Length: 120
Image 1 (tube, one colour):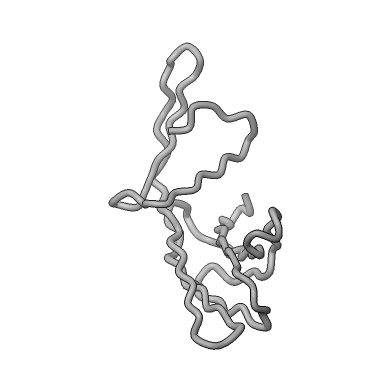
Image 2 (cartoon, rainbow, N blue to C red):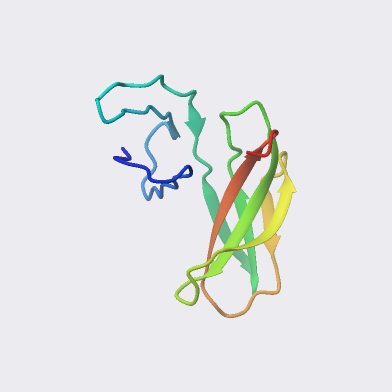
């Protein structure tokens, strides 16, 4: 449960996904009035495999909760060297894999962002 949000976008990091791996959002204001429950959304589960030297293969589950996905943004950062994640690729909404090539001998972190058809 997010207790307060001071900006329009809130990002949660889940280390242990609930079962089933979906969620909804409900707003509770300062007077404890409960807002309408959102539609269910599903987590994007990302797996990174190292099949070749200096190549990481990313596979993820498709996001569900919108009418459709326009594309996925793929972000990467070098662990312990940067606090900023860099957009490295955009793939069509029907794609759920990406090969990150030409890497160096660093540890990398990734995240995948779904972009709906209205680009929100």
